[in-house]
Image (cartoon, rainbow, N blue to C red; front, side, top):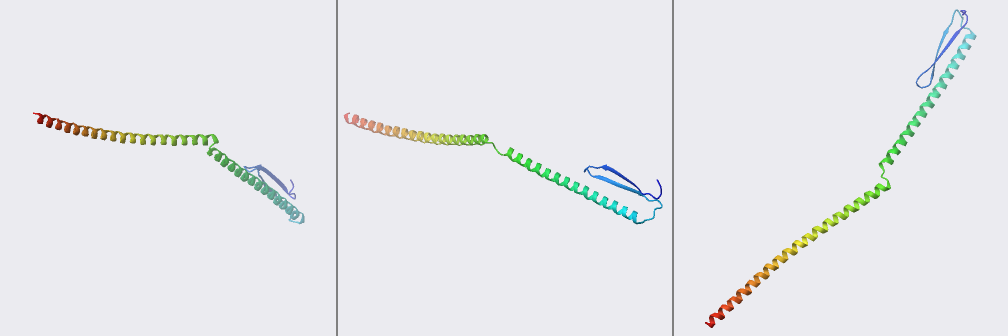
Length: 156
């Protein structure tokens, strides 16, 4: 190329964010900086600025979309976790039936204890009454024997 021309090379390559990088190489020979070169330079810097703004806008939009998607995924995940934590109606009914059965079992156990306590008291009372009757019978027999002995003693 001739020394009086400007050579412009734009190399585009993609990075992780989908942006394009531009590198410009200008080789100026023995060109005097005149009106045309300034105009071309301002057009190039204007184009570069617009391209940079466009890329920044795309990056910002992509990042916002990623953030929104992440927020939606997190919300959805929290909802799934809540659903899993909640008991189904069938589980609630089964838990109620289990509780009710336990309550009935406890009432039956308490009733059995009360009945056994009554049986024990009744048995003690029966034993006490039997002992009292036997003592009374022994006293009566003893009195009858004494009367019989006195009457036999008087007959003799």
